[in-house]
Image 1 (cartoon, rainbow, N blue to C red):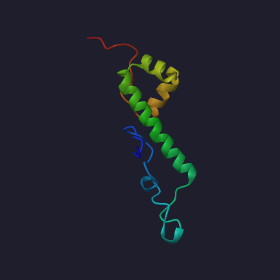
Image 2: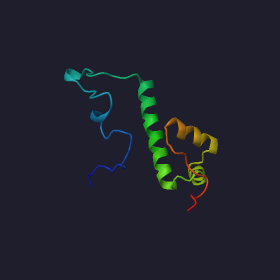
Image 3: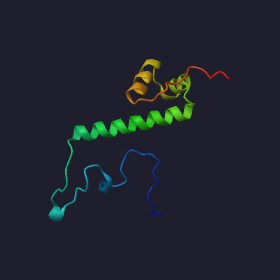
Length: 100
C-alpha cells in the first residue's frame, strides 16, 4: 500500500512533471520557469514517440511478418507500409516466412 503504480518499460510519458520536456513548472515564487514549448509541438513530439514505440513493438512481436502485424494492429497493409516508411523501418516486413 502507498506504492506508486509501476509503469511499463519504454513508456513515452514522463513519470513526473520534472521529467517533462519543458522542465519544471514550479519556479520560485510560483512563477513559471524554463522554456515552455507550444502545445502543438508537445503533442506532435509525444505522438511521434508513441507511434514509433508502437511500431517498434509491433515489428518485434510479429517477427517482421506484415500479415500478422496488420491483424494485430488493425491497420491496412498500405497504412502500415506508409508508417514503416515514415519511421524508416527497413528492410520492410515480409508477407511470408523466409525461405531457407
